[in-house]
Length: 391
View 1 (cartoon, one colour):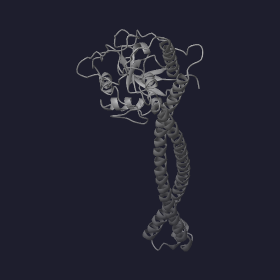
View 2 (cartoon, one colour):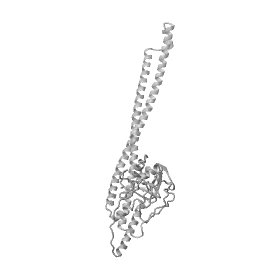
View 3 (cartoon, helix red, strand yellow):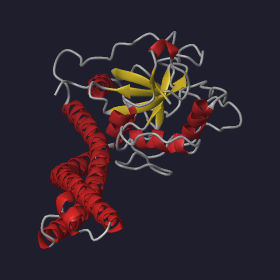
View 4 (cartoon, one colour):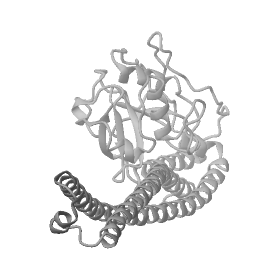
């Protein structure tokens, strides 16, 4: 797997810390204060709030749009050997991104399984209906054939019912007219019965073919649904193992490693939420209330989220239904160029669309990064952008 930007940044940050520790070890000892953990800030929806942030990496100009955002190169690993701690965090970053990608793949697989099961059910109902229609048509064909047989028997028992015989047997002109009229009716009934019998037989044969094809399609759809379900079960087992490994590693981080893993405040200094002027910006305001919320695979709120779950929950609060996975979110909605991005647009990341955040203005994106890292604001170009979608 190619190195991910987060893995590079974590490794570089740890290397800097290691160099600083070496320099500090040669300096005269001084008293140091232990780091303290403070509550993560949130953005109130009623009024703009300014939150102090680290002096480095000042925020971009606050236009509320992305037109002026310039791509920034992700820092690479420094030359020379990287500390074991840096290697551990880089590997953890790789595993966490792999787990997040697998989680989004599973969301998509569940949606596809649900569609396959609905199609299977539809085809099974259609097969039952087709079989019923074929049975009715068979019954009509049998009934019409019985009528044809009855008329043939009448002709056989009555001998030659032709006009010549009718004229010979007629006792009077009136009797001849009645015999000819009966003959005409019998002939017409026989012709109609034969036509109806042929049509009923043809209809029954066609409906039997339709029923057979529909039943075959239903069986194939059922097999596909079972295969999807089996595949999903296997991938879910892989996901559980990967999640357990990432949790174990994150939970065993030292305080210094955890600080690097989290990456600082969840909101940069001076950030002001864009005004609410449409449903999308209203969804952003809703999402901003979740700043600092913990990440959890498969969660859709309101207390914990994965990346696509945060998007789904925020838009649902404003009455819009979004697809569940980042891959599905990447193909729904309307495509938007980066220079035209507006608050509330979804920013999809990585070549396989395995991560998603919400554009928050000021060249920032709001997202749920990974396990152990809370919902936060980050530069929109901190990860490779796949596409931007507007709902």
